[in-house]
Length: 124
Figure 1 (cartoon, rainbow, N blue to C red):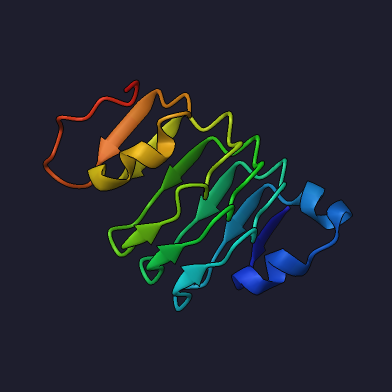
Figure 2 (figure 1 turned 120 degrees about the vertical axis):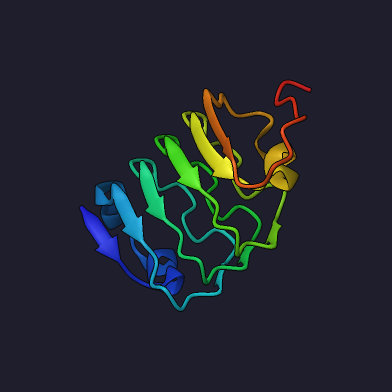
């Protein structure tokens, strides 16, 4: 199931609906992803974060075990340290190098940096 909705909608869905959602699209005028918005969306493997988002808060994607790839747009200025905890299958990441420490426990295999800084090591 693919759903396009504001984060508050995802936060309020029951467990049965959460399990059916595999792809999520956030509208272009959304400015933040709140705490626990996608918590335990176990089958979510793709999320489209628009350029309007500036903040991703604590535990926003906690327990999204099948989330495989994510692009953090350049508009994002702040990501809480625990935003992606438990995203154990996250292997493809595109983000600003300043956020690499947030993903240090993930098994990233493909990394694209959105700035020119390349001197980062995910294993340290």
